[in-house]
Image 1 (cartoon, one colour):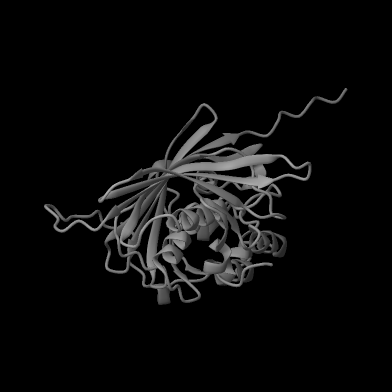
Image 2: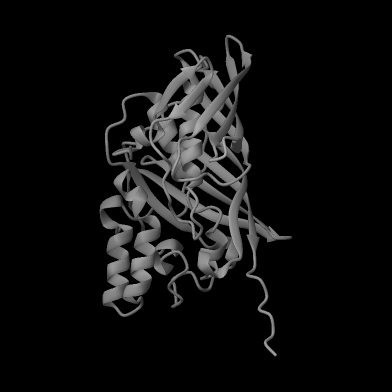
Length: 322
């Protein structure tokens, strides 16, 4: 049954000791291919890992690899291996998989999740600050509002707006997202709009996509907030180099995340309150790209960082006709 909120999307049932299954199917989001959004597997996996640790242990690191596509028409399964349990730390190996029509089990994601109890004291307390959080959430437009504005201004066609809306609308039921006027994702509708932007004079690695985000529904448990965080932080990093180059997913032969590192900097992540995300590309060569997304709370304190290496291939060369 489809989920009605982000907590339901990441919810799991315990099948046996250390084995869990999602209660809702994953969703299609921001992918030209008919495969599920990668954040679905991460959100479910993080929530499953939380079910195996004692209260008071807070997740701070999620490091792993995507092994293959997640399908939208079936549940996600999580097998948990307890690799460390001490008075301070807990580590879980999470193997995410799906059952195929022929009965075989195919792995889709594997990651290590590390937890730590609250430290009694901190020697140093410092943080980086966001570069572009000059507009409040209330001053920023939703993706739908921005697309409709570009349509009215003649900068986007009705077909482009429809494609953009269809690609990203699935997450709108879970998360409220608002983008500052100068965000590259917002200005180009994820690379579908080719006109001038406010960042045209910047180098590719200096351009930014930024957005405010919060859950549309209440979240009760820490695992709900961190599952929502993992679900959200995966978004856009694989195709960010395309967007910042004014190219869309449809202009690439292949674009998909390969590995990821999600680091949580705070034990007090609140995804019901507004948080601000900034994303940049860092490197691209040899058919791979490397991008980073940083998340800050409304007070400007960094609460999470995700980096990803992704595959990015050109479209096959067209064969010459005789």
